[in-house]
Image 1 (cartoon, helix red, strand yellow):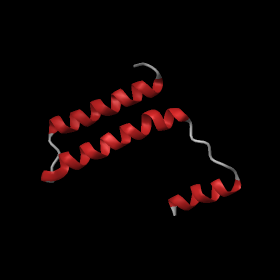
Image 2 (cartoon, one colour):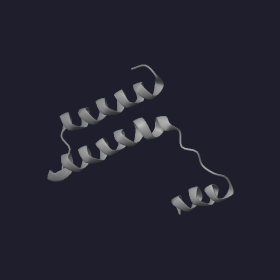
Image 3 (cartoon, rainbow, N blue to C red):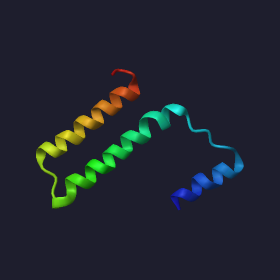
Length: 68
């Protein structure tokens, strides 16, 4: 259902993806998914692993905001 909204919108008018999104966000999301997969192999996320994800998120948001 969620993908149909984007699909229908793209039929009405082309969707332009900014180059910044492709150059920064997609690799960050890919690294996050790989990290999550590797960390959750033992079915548990420890405190330091959670802090690592939080740091990763803060750095990403700082980069998006132009702070870092």
